[in-house]
Image (cartoon, rainbow, N blue to C red; front, top):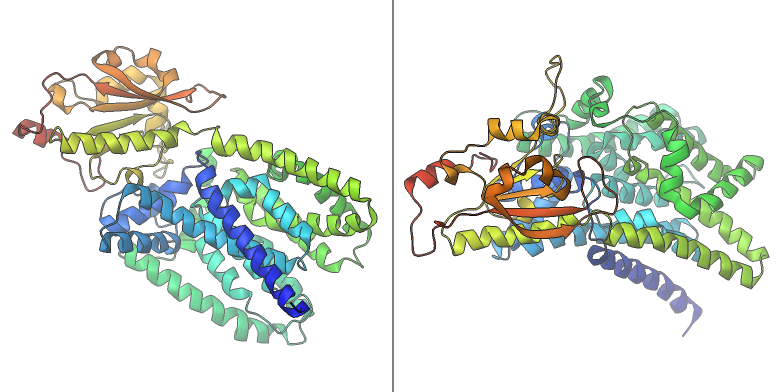
Length: 526
């Protein structure tokens, strides 16, 4: 075999490795992370494809882009066309799609990192990327697009602008994607031999307009009226500060908690690379620009009160690039034993959080959905009546119609922000937890009993507070959720089934009264 053929085989093996790793994560990552993984992607796609599914306030107010859910809806439509729209495939295929996109971006990361072995290692061993790379989050897609764009960024020359296509697409999916690209694009414009106005008018603007037209067309089609979701996103999240409704952190949180957490043990090589780059910025000009993009992004995000780990996903690959570059140069001078020791320590201290958070922590709210889908099918086929489910837990704690795939009545505690500026505003979830039994007496009918939910889904920590209500229910199944509990989140998720000796069977027809009580509206809610 000649050297050319050997060189061609290595990238193919790297791509195959990342595809295998990300597809494996589809099956290995079995836990809950954040609601957006389902409520801002799968649930929206399910409504597009099948006509039912709940749209959160972000969609009714038009602050989210339909580009990503439309891609998933296309998968759903294809499954429906071939009559294979089974719940397992509705849950699995979108994750496989995202895993493949992530795997391709991993391969582009390898190409961008001069095909170094350490680039493969740091990316494959990153606990947070393993934890999120196959999740159907817009942040995950945003990260993949960022890596693809960085691999095309013209560090050596300023003529190429094809990197702008994934950049613009990412910005229209999540407008905050623009933040790390501000210093990078300034660098690109400054380095160019062409006038700035020429690049802006002939390259930046046409690509932005093309992607913008696509985005506005898709959003307008699904929303039913002219809509520019990036503008609405900024208007609500930045100008109105709606995001702070979902929690606030001090300005320095990303520096002392956020970034060190997502990097884990990788914080050490990243800091070493940072120090080296700052001391020799004239030598490591490319790395200095990347470091500037990281710092700029963290500073901008720090100015916003609402903070989350996933918001840093977009700059995680840049941090890993700097770490891989440092480790590649360090390993040339270090002894073989020391290199192996470093690799083993980095791998071990990444595998531990990846394994625990992917397989154990917060898995109950995912595991419960398979049983609920079975229950819904059982009630339809054996009892000839639809099940009625109520989730008495913090809002959006579980997936919804996308994991049940039956148009039954499902009720959850809402938590919309104060969009109307009401004084002393409390969302429904907060009202419930303030007085659980009071909320139940006010919102759940007692007569006729058939109007009550057939099943209650709640954390076990709530049981003592609503034991009177649960007296007519019995525990059906319990699912471990977490070793760490709060006032609202318990150790286990429990399904309670209403005891009803007169439940109709397949040989009986439901009464007109039952039909009248349980008809869901267009969102599948009472």
